[in-house]
Image 1 (tube, rainbow, N blue to C red):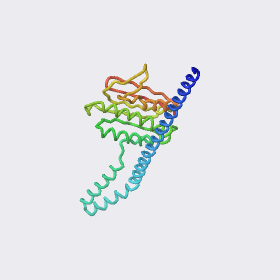
Image 2: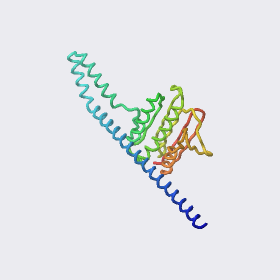
Image 3: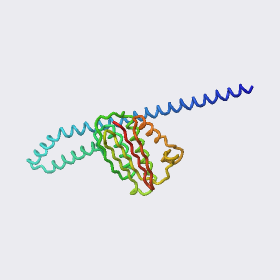
Image 4: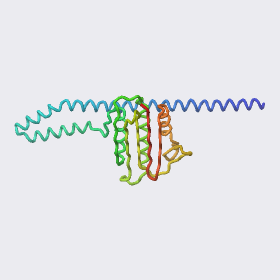
Length: 239
């Protein structure tokens, strides 16, 4: 009887842990698939913008010739109207960041536009080669989660004038250096020296874990620092 009970307990324990393993793997797979779909969508949008910009530059001489013709005919009002139309056309293809890398631009412009709409002061600089040895999905996971956390941190600050996000991305000594610093008004939670979350409520830092796992995948380095009112993350990824 005793062996039967112990056997049942062991079997039940194995089943529970197996279910947890499969559910977690399924959940992570779905997140990866969702991130991939989002990144793919953003990349297509930025590539479309780049094509429009190249087309606009190609037509630049034609625009100049048209305005010269209006000027020779002394049609000033037509020139003003033409310039207004060109201004609207140019604004429609403008982006916050032009790093040179489509994936980086896709994620940054999407997230920073969102931050801007939340009345967050932005200071962003990025210069990245067109092609790097980091998968688009992995780059999206790191940048997307870093900026999501930064935006959420800023929104804990009541005064919009005190909200800020600083982003700096650059290739340094054959490594991709990523720095994200943001304002915040809450306590971060740690176990020892390890940050487990920068959020309140039931979220236990799954975004931080996704960043850590992706950085580890490339043998990279990550450093997080928090001071009163500021949270900063640095990431180094070997290229």
